[in-house]
Length: 414
Image 1 (cartoon, rainbow, N blue to C red):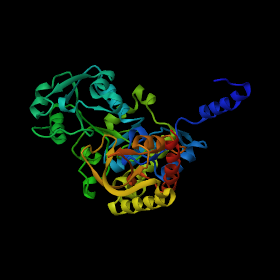
Image 2: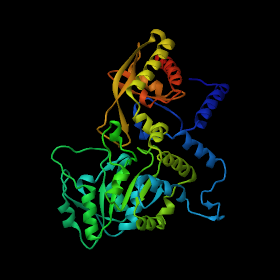
Image 3: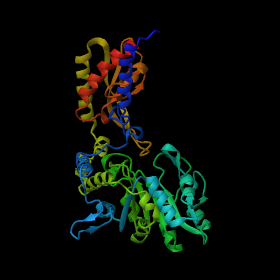
Image 4: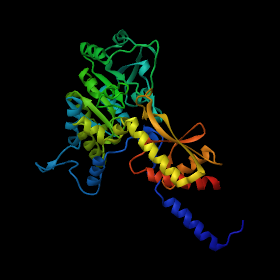
């Protein structure tokens, strides 16, 4: 291949244009996985977005109290809301749930033993393992029971003068069935009170409304843990809560105050934009029905099948009008996932648009959609590209139609 100097100019220009494009960009999630970790987990409500823009583009009261005219603590923006919605005595937030667990273990159990059931030594996404974060926090792991069965007497026998904490971890990203037994949080709390040892509950995903009331599998709520008497409860902000990435910590006031003054609290603190989004998300929970309507994660999870059918029919119609005979398009039932390590056995009925393009493999078609100007992330099933309307947002149907047309042209050329 012989190149003249003049040939290099457009090539260099194209390379520069490619390098200057943002790496972090918007995509259309058509996978049906609502809390998709690889795609940024929960998307924010319009109110949360407005709050972020407001504080990001100007100075703010991040650590300033207007009435007194003096410095304040950034936790005040979310503490009362967390207390009100959870029923706890006190609360704070750090940058994710792993950080919340790490801070709690460092502050409450460094150099001492933490007792936990073997069946709760979980690993979540990104190879985050409970034993490893315990070790990093300086706590000494004391496993009790077996993988499938742990009894209260196992905890009782393991308690020594070196025991700092009883830890219960909600196995939100997997389930063990069959010959199993675990100790209810309430029983563990009673043991902790009798022996003078605090009990910590790592809820993982964390939810503030009872999803069982809306036809889904029951998921323990934060309020349940507080009512059971847990001294400290940790959970995520960007999973079932439907807010920004954050690690939320609620519980007894004396313990939370101890965490607030720990040196790690500053290293793990939230920035102003996350606090703004979290504050507005929590405020929506003051009215459950409003939260379900306005928080996208909850709204997508609880969208009726009839509405998904209308969306799927609308997309199929537009695709047929735009693509003529190039596509084989079918609206068909399928199942969506909650995702994000939450409700692992829950399969939500959904409606999808299944597409096959003449002369183009499903893999090539999916790749072309994924690499388009506005990437559409789909899945493949039975050698067809599947677009699940549960996670497709309002206004994105037209963009998908254009993306499908462009993908057909690209896939045919490759």
